[in-house]
Image (tube, rainbow, N blue to C red; front, side):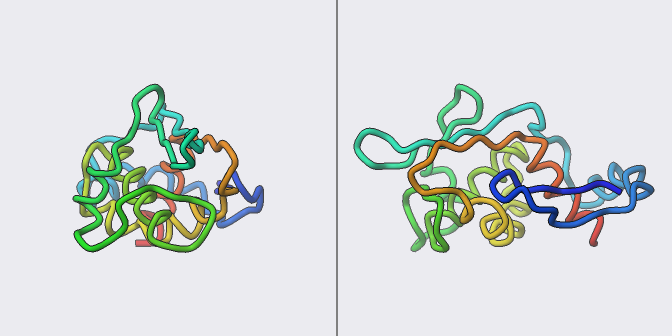
Length: 145
């Protein structure tokens, strides 16, 4: 069994039969997933002015691009540690970046990703999210479809 563990809770979320691992590349291809940034570590911190800064390795993520994917009329800034628009925008931005610009899949998965990860982080705390955790989250959804 493969255990998927969100970094913030340390609690097992779901187990998958290891036999499904061999099927993942085919399922990913059917879903149109070409590549993922599994090697990247995403980091978030509060800025000196109280805002939220998010990085993919050394590269700062721009909330404006996530806004384009998320849709007009939504939040304009990233947030975490609560249920709301900021964490959902961040979830969209993280998934979009991780999936090399797959906006359709990022929009489809952002709500559950936000609930499982982003909303659980402490608002004022620094966080790190290895790309492998995002990959496991996506593969979990592929295995369910």
